[in-house]
Length: 127
Length: 177
Image (cartoon, rainbow over all chains, first blue to last red):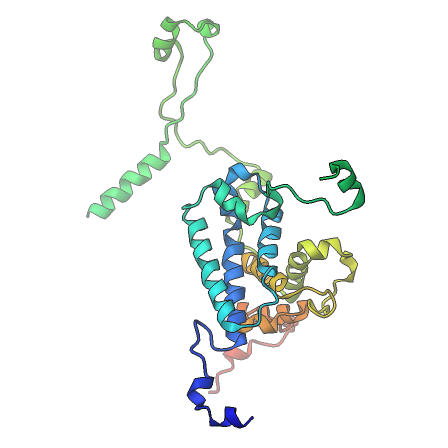
């Protein structure tokens, strides 16, 4: 529109956090996935009390990455990448403990899941 | 000088490696302290034996030779075998029917895998072939045939057919006089 023509071009460009375009961001994401994948056998042993198998760990990794698959903003992706890399370093250097590492595994959540279907609500009673 | 001496010492130790044989004695069934302390006197130890190699049979020599075998050089057929094995061992492809995976199945289009699954396959290939595949080449590796061609290029596999035997003289020796 008329206003956008008058805005200086420098204000239209945004300073990137890490990557400049989607291709670079995708490369970074795949690299992060790769280093997590290579670390999986060590995670299994370092946090052995969680009783994880390697296919389970791969599934957990996949779910955590697919959680953010609909993000399109490059700067948000970069922030998530940085967080992922920090989590990786904490997990690899064993600065976490077993319960900390288990936070990534949603199947180990202990909060009570609200019943959705009729029978489950029936068993619960009228609360 | 010192190296010669050390080499001579090494030769001596190799030839006269100590083998301890224990011959059973009458007191072997008792586990008393007296027996244990006098073990060296009660049983016979044959300390230094001479060369222990006797005449070996051909089978025994073959067993020894297996330690020193070098593997055959890679051919494109063996390469395709290895690649297909790696691809078929992938979790998601195992669940789907194995017979569908041919050399030209595209991972994304035909099998419906996404880029993260593709990365898993590439990591498995890296583990199999022992070298790191750079990011730039991920785009090339979407079908097993492309993977085989990439490996042939990177591992310098010999694809030319073996030379047929003929009674011609060696052309390398045809020196013009």
